[in-house]
Amino acid sequence: MTKSDLIQKIADRNPHLYLRDIEKIVNTIFDEITDALADGNRVELRGFGAFSVKHRDARIGRNPRTGESVQVEAKSMPFFKTGKALRERLNGEDA
Image (cartoon, rainbow, N blue to C red; front, side, top):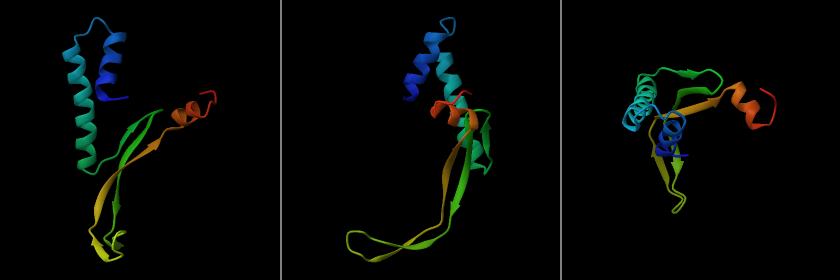
């Protein structure tokens, strides 16, 4: 599902809302999650999951084409851990 699919699905379920307002809401939610992660905070959506940031240390990697050693810089990566209710639903268990 893409962001535009999500917006359309919300619009279909809520015909009393304007499409432009739904788009603003969805964009605001994603922007707030992104900003919180950029600030180093964790975002938890109960029953769905939690977004956090994992830090990877600098290391020496290898260029797979040439086999040459390459210095890989330290970086931060977004990480998502599913919530219990989502995991149970995906595995066909009663939630």
